[in-house]
Amino acid sequence: MGGVAVLLKSLGFEVSGSDSLFYPPISDQLKKFGIRTYGFSEKNVEDVDIVVVGNAVSRDNVEVQEAIAKGKKIMSYPEVINEFFGKKDFFVIAGTHGKTTTTSLVAYLLNSAGLSPSFLVGGVPINFGVSAKVGEGDVFVIEGDEYDTAFFDKKPKFWHFEPKRAIIGPIEFDHADIYTDLEHYISVFYEFSKKVKDRLVFFFSDRGNLVAERSGAKEKFSYGFDDKANFFPTEISIFDLGYKFKISNIPFQGDFSIHLFGRHNILNSIAAISLLSDIIGYDKMADIIEGFRGVRRRLEIIYETQNFCIIDDFAHHPTEIESGIRSLKDFFDVILLAFEPRSFTSRTNIHQEGYKKVFQLADAVFIGKIYREEKVPAGKKLNVKDVIDFLNSRGIHAVYSEDIALKLFEFIQSNDMFRGKKVAVVFMSSGDFYGQKEEFILFMRRKIAREIFS
Image (cartoon, rainbow, N blue to C red; front, side, top):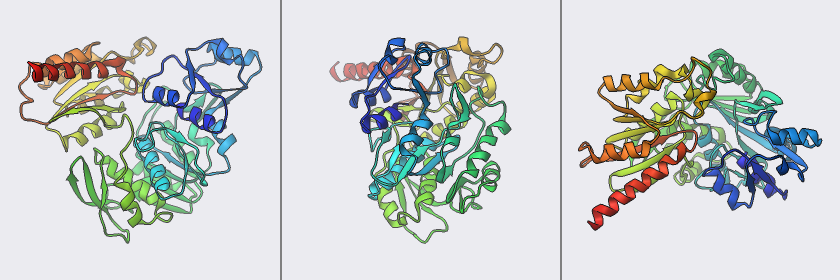
């Protein structure tokens, strides 16, 4: 929604917005563009012509009620995009994992090649410094979200777009608050794939293959680590804080280099390159991609000193968490995980065993307060004590606390395991983690200041 606000502002509209809470990086973006923000109040819609409603807002919201009472035009954000950008060629990036980074990369490749795309991403690409932009070119690159659209439209958001090209990344069960099971979840991707006209790039797997079979796209290409995929990486090597690799079955034999944590970003890169291979040459993309710097809050370094990094990540699904930890193990000796159960999926026990399994990959685990736990149905809440007890029984230091910053700092101060090692503290949350990241950075700055000046 913060990106939609920027697009409308760029088109010349006067834009303001309401929410229960604003936090970086989107709060910074809105301020940069002069978009006023408020808490919810019926006064905020008095003098507006259109009210754009996100899917987090219910029908009984005070502004929605006021807009209905006054006969204001109410739209969802997909309706807004189609209203003002519907004549462009949509390149839609979908899938459970990787779509924010891949969307950002597709937009970056097109933009760096001089094609000036418009884009809308569910994060802030570091190269652009903004989550959305109105470009002069014919292409609109958009992150395709499978979550529902609004209180008045329960269809998945990505059903509203008619993609000329699309990527469908890995598919795993998510959004347990609106999908009953895996089959229900996959079914919306079946319908989405049928909409793709020219080129579909999909993650090679049993699920991905089934989805792709239903697509009427003129061209279909698979990607993955599996050598049965059309495109897979070869000759992978680690350098600095990134990777070099080649891609199978393409005429270009040179290396591609990315400055990103995580082997999953090799796959994200191959997906983006495959989508655009006939638009931008492989050799040109190899030159461009090295300059891509990723997305805010996707394994983003937010503080570092010698041999020590604090990293911010949006992960909330067990697969994303596993991928993140394994990614960091390529570059760090010790991984300390701070996790906030924030999304509805992470607050429930649907992935209870999954969290127990992936948390074992970390050297210590710190679980923060469950966000709005009173909203989780009885008997379905994540059993944090069970997770903590399991990890402790496996010899992994694990605690639950509402003051994660302090617990982390105390653990680091009292432990000799860090001497001479490269250490990463990664905060994983789909929200703001109650300000604990910033508080922990403050602790570390004070510690370093004391060591320098003592």
